[in-house]
Image 1 (spheres, rainbow, N blue to C red):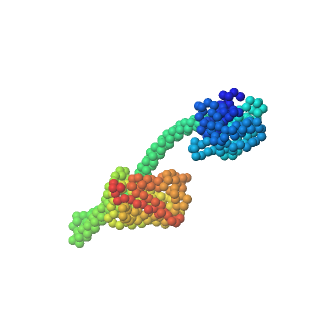
Image 2: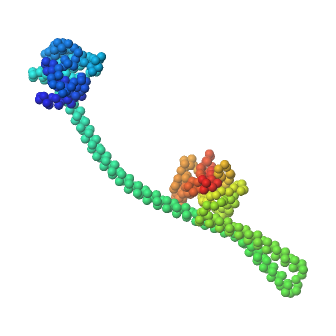
Length: 436
């Protein structure tokens, strides 16, 4: 083997490797040996005896004995240490011209140069095995590197493709989200207008009663005026008749005035609620009177059934908030109770209690309906969740309630159910949405 090729081979080994001539001169040492035994590769004809602290004659005898033997022969070499107080003792075994450390913890390899072909073959058998092992490692490493390189290329391509897909999907998602927000806004507006329509029907029904009384009283008064006019024209009107006419006129006028005041109050309430629903501005609200007016407008919900409501609220609780949004919340909750909670219930009861706590007001809404299944309780505020999908339910009623309370009224709502009957919502609203 050419010496240059040999140098290249053993220099690639990770174990310290030294090639000796038969007289003990170092022909070549690889990088690992240079580091381990402090050999300066620039020095020519460095002798092994310069690296050890043993007797030179003893080393010469060992080299000659190792060179001539084909069987394992023990030997002992003490290498000098960079630290003068320390030495490195290596016990060696030799087979042919190959010297290996006896201890498994040492990895140095010493080869003795010879010209005999048979001895050379025996000496370099282990070296060839080492080279073959190294070649396999190199091939495996190269294959792994090629696979990693190919995987990196594929990964970059995959990432690029996935990125494009995600960007495309993101655009579609953003478009869908905008359409959903637009649709949700439209649904909220539609529900407000539907609620306003319900208010119109309720107020119309309520106004119909006092107006009907006024019409009846006015008709009766008109008949009495005709009757007493005839008696007056016939000169048959007596003092008692005139006094009776005055009493009838006074009573009729009082009835008409009282009922017209009631009708005017209803119209005023409807006007305020209608303005709040169509133009939900922030203003001061007297909670008790406002919710009472709202419940009057929601009477159509209770007209064709035996359901009823109870409302309890202390006087003089005022907040600065959005009245139309509060009306929307209560309307949706009542609608939800009647359409869903009271299904199969004959005498439904809705209770609305308002209490004043430290930093806000608390509206406690409850009913005695069939309640909400435990598996559905975590999903009731999710958009499009409904148990009436096949019956026209949109699943936006309670989601709208949640969004209005959280985002516009700056409050919070939670379902506080401990049983499987009825519902119990706790709603907290700040005294002022501006200060919050």
